[in-house]
Length: 597
Image (cartoon, rainbow, N blue to C red; front, side):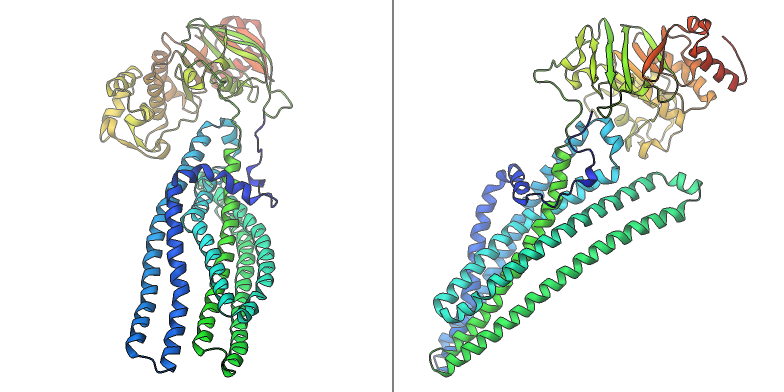
């Protein structure tokens, strides 16, 4: 088994084609094509105002020097002021429109990423740091938002404005226009080098950010362990190292960024000097009016502005492209378990679950399960026992179809489990894990796993059946009481009872218990054993057992070692045979201070 991208932290290939990445964003953009049409209109209006302003200023100067009418100057001054008002108002509307569109697009992208994350296997999530996934879903997606909220239109506006201003200058006075045109190739080459260099640095910065976010997330989750082993100072040092690594990368980016744009400011000053040098001579020779020189100076300032903005926006495109690469890399991760075309959408467990010569490998190399064959009849209760790392949890993953066999098949009533949809099969089974997860929210929401269609009475009946109703009703608010993250405001035994009630609420045909009582103390275990017996009544069950004394009454016990079933039978038979099961059982009972059959 492997993923399309096995290491999501090392996916930033500097050869990534930005155009290809942007093309993949088109499905999210198409529903907003009308907004881009309106944006094109606003760009045209703003460009016209940008062109009209310097011309009006030049006319005012020439009329004033020639002693023209005061009223005409006032009209032109009013028109000059109006260009600023219209440009500012149009720009404001443009920002509102594009921000709304950008938020809509990025919301759709985040929903796609989140939905895809939920479709990926438990193995993927075990191998992927939580902080990295949060970084992909939130931080990288936010970078992409900027591309649509302002960058795309600003990029287009800069190109249009630059072309329009340069064209007007060449038509008006081609000599002065050519002076400025000579600077364009130099600036283009410099911009190309800058963007190529800065993109590599931004990719490295995004990588450092993901590492930093991942570390903070993991250490915050492990605060009790850090405090218990007095590792706070070491954790702070590690965080400082990663902070400093990101700081050094970001400083390289800032030095390069500000140095480059500082050169542009200098180039603007050089262009202004050239305009004055050549323009003053023509004015003195009587071939050019002073107002035209002033107009050219204004155009010179404004023609450099779109070049700077163009470079900045292309720079942002590189950032957004790097972030989009990471988002799409996550979306390209292939689910290990996928429904076949035409998969059956409903089923009921009526006869048996069969493992037929099943083998499984996590990496496509060494098999962790080999030649597994057994059958669980409808209504039968079996237990999986054996040394840690023997393959019990992998078997549970195959039963729940979190994994698919590398070879062989898992059959439900004689039909390959892969012939059914995942949703259809999981609707028929209940899973209780050793690590009991509770969502932040009410007890009621947790028991029906946020499915509001399940009647509250059904939930209460399930809680009562496993004797969880007693402590629930004593909570402030009862079933409406809010649980802390991971249910930390409840005892371990109470969380265990809630997990039983949650499984029973779904009325499963198959119940899978993966070391469900191994984390509780023996006294608590005795108190919840009765609830567990009620939960198992009348159901097919597969139980992964840590404490062997809890599964003596099951119909059959499978001993799993090194990926194979080495012993099989009821408790008395296995104990009498004197094999591995008896050795494990006696070891536990001796450790508990007693020995019994």
